[in-house]
Amino acid sequence: MCKFLIFRITKLKSYLLRSFPSGHELREITFDPNYKIGRFRAHDFFGDGSFYLLDVPGHATGHMCGLARTTLTTFTLLGADTCHIAGCFRPSEYNPMPANLLLKDGLDPYFVASCPCSMFSSFHPAARTEEEARVTPYYKASDARGSAFTNPKVANESIKGFEEFDAHPDVLVCLAHDTGLLGVLPMLNDGEGDIGDWKIKEYKEATNWRFLNELPRDGKQGRPRIVNGFWRDGKQVATFDG
Image (cartoon, rainbow, N blue to C red; front, top):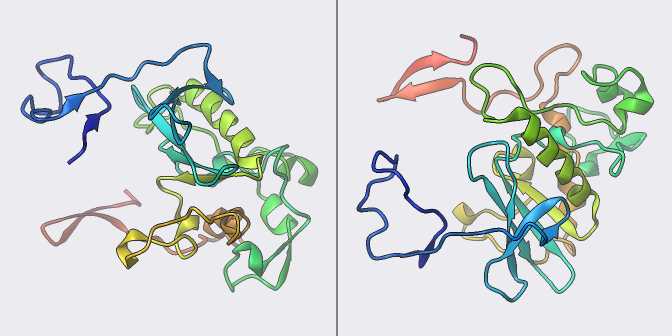
């Protein structure tokens, strides 16, 4: 049972039941505007520098991320829903795409052993030249109707801050929906889950460019979808095609 719940129910019509916090100690998190890590207001949760909460706005009201110390000098940034694919902050001016990508960089066997970056930069939606494509993220937070971001403009500012964390050799960025982490990081479902030694095991290098596997190939869809739509009671009720 969690000792702390990092929220406060302020409305009687909350999405949470009023009985939910019963028996828990409620602790409202406040951020000192003068205490920041990178671009984000930070809160030292335990007071010992082992875990920080970061105020990362844009996705939803009160959205926060966790910065966990894994060794004396390394951290893992638990990126939550700041964005939903690493291509929102990769590549960047701080973490440019290599001229040639190798299978050891996490590319699928579909690609040749040494793959020129032009295979991915030629259809970059936000760059006009290969040089720009190597330092420009592929995506931004959507401002379309139904977007997952309550404030896309603010979300893009937050994502920009992730570029700086991502480029630091002592920070491993883990998004909640990053499929590029699957197959590399140990999973709790497999009875494992400790990534404290991520730098020694080179998880950062192994996952850095895996999001490219999701991009189109030769004008066609990249990897197959993990799921094809929404299901209810064992029946597919909607597809992602409409």
